[in-house]
Length: 208
Image 1 (tube, one colour):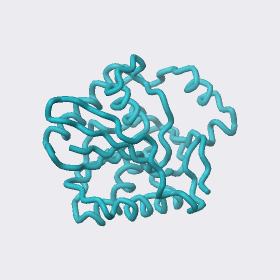
Image 2 (cartoon, one colour):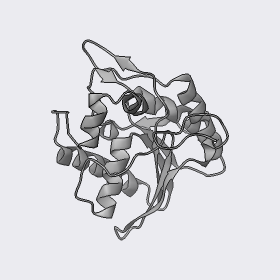
Image 3 (tube, one colour):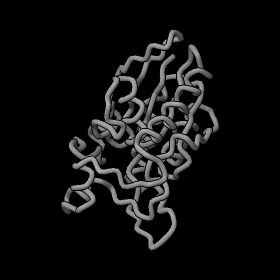
Image 4 (cartoon, one colour):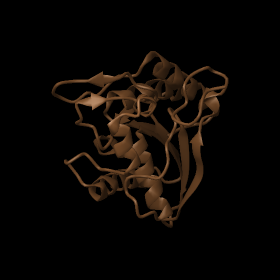
């Protein structure tokens, strides 16, 4: 079967005194999601899953509508910082050389609900259950950068459970999953749908 892991679009910045920030998509994020749906319209998906966080669920909406499916929310593919009271796009942190950006570069884990290993186990277990449920099919899971890193890192046998690369907004990461248990990474950071749109693509790559 073919698995498409898709990162959400660009969300708004939100910083709260208390409670989970859980930001919605920005105007650019909604446009990215629409381009994503149009790009994948020629491919038939058997199901569209999404993290329950708003930035992921909203990204999945145009895709699910285009494919004629209802979105199925999967709690276990929520991001590691789901309960954080702030969300600042990483591009803004980098531009300001924010201490939080420096902490990310050092690989510091600042969330206490679960360890990096527990996070990866949660993500891998959930994704593998969905893969098993759609043997021979093609599904999309709209989720987060940490989730994508966790699962691909697991496939590649990497020791760092926190990740190894930066997924661009609405980037597609394809995995071929065999019934024998073999997993092959087919594409990483597929963002052709954002070319020449003028929309932001991510940290290290501008839209052209």
